Amino acid sequence: MTRHTVPVDVHLVLRRNGAGGPEVLLSRRAGAVYATGMWHLPSGHLEAGEDMAVAVVREAREETGVLIEAADVTAAVTVHHHPPTGGRSRFGVFFEVRRWSGRPRIMEPDRCDGMGWYPLDALPGPMVAYCRAGLDAYRAGLPAAVHFQRPGDAVEYVPGAPDRTRLLSGPPANGGAELPHGLVEFAEQAVGRIARATEVSWVRTGSRVWRLTGADGGTWYLKRHRGAKFHDREVAAYRSWVPALGSRAPRLVAADTAARAVVVSALAGRALHGAVLSAAEEARVQHGLGGLVRALHRSAPEQRPTGSATAADKVGRHLERARPYLADGDEDLVRALAGCYADLPEPVLVPTHGDLQYRNVLLADDGRPQLIDFERSEYGTVTRDLARLSDTWTGRPELRAAFFEGYGRPLAPVEEVRLDCEAAFDAVSGIAYGTSHDDPEVTERGRRTLRRLHAARRP
Image (cartoon, rainbow, N blue to C red; front, side):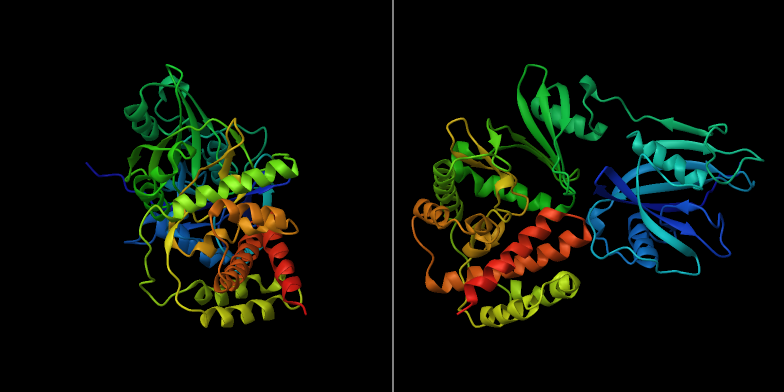
């Protein structure tokens, strides 16, 4: 009996959030290629000996110029396709990516004459029917589809023509929880039967978060990290540093390294991000944050840097990416601060949150702040941990004073200089990331920080 062998294609679903909802990047085929003149996802063939995640990263770079980390590649849909022109069937594996660097552009003009972002619910035509089948399964949240076309069928998707796409569902999730089957098993082993799962992911990050409601009414949160680095950091923080915060941070219930997933306890409260507070209420929150951050920074012994790399070492790369979006004088300012940073004495490192900003703070019923989301936690400088939070102090000296009163000490003069430097580095990184990922909030925070630093350095 002859075994059936088929070619494998990889397809890139590069996804961003547009004004009207999710959008994907499409390219239009041109020249002496199959389906010329039709829209398609960036894609290509799997080469001999190549793993498919590496292949989609390669195809993304070759066709669109964007750079993708392997940890940010997520499997989305598999399509078993048979073309209308005869020949062998093939498998197409569609990968979703929500995080990348660089702006997409046409890299192979002899094979592509158009590229753009299109809403998932308003895809352009003519589109290759094979690609459309994969996107139909993707939009439906289903893991696979069979798309066997017949002789005489059009290569392009034709509205109203016989539908050759058969969508396949995955294993049922217990209790109707809208989770991948493997995560349902992990979560139910940790907390018991799940009655409901609601996705509550932050829209612009690669990690995914679900709020779980147990059959007996308990509440937990399940997070699947976008990469092993973030998983390892968060698990280590929960096991070693976060207990110092007591009831004002979640506790780790279970972790699965293979699935890059954790279950943590739920905190009662409302998000500080977007909350409307009086000046006095916000000052009290900042005072409470100061105490929380102090407890985190003191939760383990201080360390000394073990390598020569610093935040300043990365600033050149970030400046290269952000340069088209910087205001006059911004680059000179940042380079001057990088030079100053290199002359500072060696800092001590402490356990840090790594992403200290209002969106990672919950307000308890009594108004006290609580910290969440420790996937960026690591040993770092005190001032690096304050760089993003310092944006909330712009024009609000009373908030800064309240924070440091809660923290228990002011910054030393050398730390004040270090904070300016690290805030500038974070700002350039934010502008580079925000402009390439259509994240206006991060972009604006970076620009606001640089304006503040310009003003502070004027005679």
